[in-house]
Image 1 (cartoon, rainbow, N blue to C red):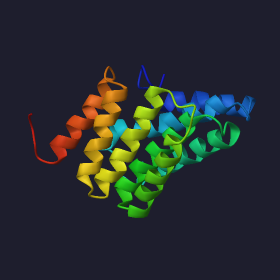
Image 2: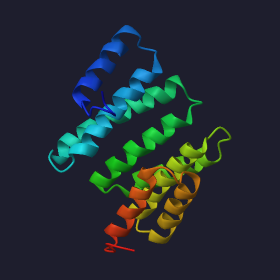
Image 3: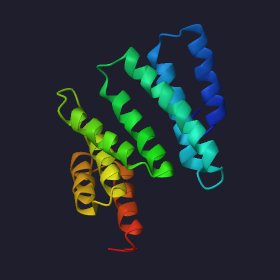
Length: 171
């Protein structure tokens, strides 16, 4: 519902039902967190900042619950870093970006990261660097993400957004 059909409210509601039935089933928290995050991501130009921050707060709470339930799964930390980056972008909280960067460093030291998750961690660090004004390091992170996941269109889009945000419309 969330990823394919973009029915965020329905997906969040279904995940909430699952949580009521099985409150220690971690995937429901991950799915619901993703629903809140994707709602903000898809609607950020149409919803008020306060509404975005509220949705991101719910997403963070669920991502943190997922991590408590499955602390060995690096996906939970990548998901939380994404929520934190989006929250920090809206609040302009540089310390939150630094926390994302520190989380990315801890992730990079993990032995159980797939190339795709490692690429996601590089993207999260790149976004934090970019929002802290360190564009050279951000570009290095985006390039490394592309090296690790060259067939992932999202990685190409992230780097294109980087160039667009710097005012370069074409290569």
